[in-house]
Image (cartoon, rainbow, N blue to C red; front, side, top):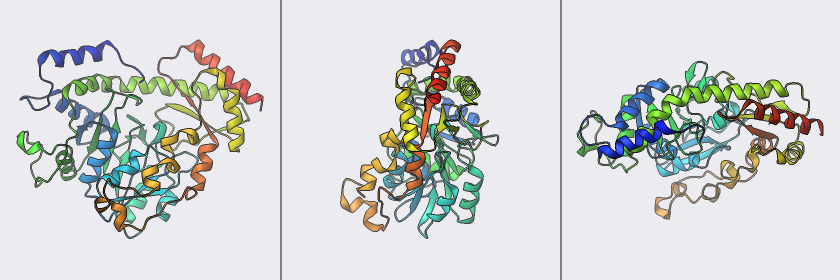
Amino acid sequence: MYVIGKEEADAAREVIMSGRLFRYQGGESQTERFEREWAAKIGAAHAVAVTSGTAALICGLVGLGIGPGDEVIVPGYTFMATALAPLAVGAVPVIAEVDESLTLDPADLERRITPRTRAVIPVHMNGLPCDMEPIMDIARRHDLRVLEDCCQADGGSYRGRRLGSIGDGGAFSFNYFKIVTCGEGGAFVTDDRAVYERAVIAHDGGCAFWDQGLVQNTAIFAGVNFRLNDILAAIMRVQAQRLDGILAALRAEKQALREALAGETAFTFSPVRDPKGDCGTALALLFETPEQAASFLERTADLGAGLGSPINSGRHVYTNWEPVMNRLGAHRGDLDPYRRSQVEYSPDMCPNTLRHLARTVFVPTSATRLRQELLALAEGLRQAARQA
């Protein structure tokens, strides 16, 4: 959580005191207002507010028509939910390499395409934009749908366009750890009305009963319940107003750290596919070897700044995705998408990903850190670098 305060508390209290906690109580709800405002913020025609980033990915895949027999390419560095979402709709995730930017490697994406591939989920990890131009080119040539996973990159952009507005749809998370938050929540955005209506049905199996005009042209099918409540939506309306200010503060601190460390030779800065669109949530330092990165982390352990290597992030590294690696795609075998799939996994199937992760050290940024604290952090990093 970056910035939250009295305004969010006031917004939540107003909803509670009104007694209108449910989005369907007549008139325009806080949830509907947030959906309209978030779509406008991202630059998309439609938005569906949901309970999590995982729910946004699942609804997005349903909206895009992905299902049994399909393969969906995902990167080997992302929260496991990116790989679980295809399984939730009956498809199978295929894991691809990331490059030194720690985002999906377009060349490996193309190598992983098979006759069963229907979609790709590029993940803008740690606020870093994927190289969307070649990814979109590959997708168009192979007739693939593109669902952007923006769960760690709320508000980021690529070449002047907000992340989530470039592909066929975008999924966002408002979890406690994200750039903007209501504790737990998410949203799916798209420009395609048909995709939007299918996502609406997927997120609310009872939507046909509320008579809100959200679904106009799509036959109702069996959905579930990923509805967001109006308390969380009211908080998110305030958080969305804070978004650009939070991003500006994070980007400014990241730039200050880059400038302070620019002369060091122990590491380089990891490449960023669009520095202007980078959310700035962390400065990534790239070392020549994993051993050098590990040694640097040992020397900076006392700084108290939360430095870490993505190789140690557990649930974000494909080798730790137990249900995926063990091909356990459902609670019953007859529902398991792997039952009809030949996709196999091994711990060493993405060696470049593992090496890039192990060579990288993240320096987290803060939207509220004092200038003197930042200068002290930079000095500590410089001293550790010169001890190499």
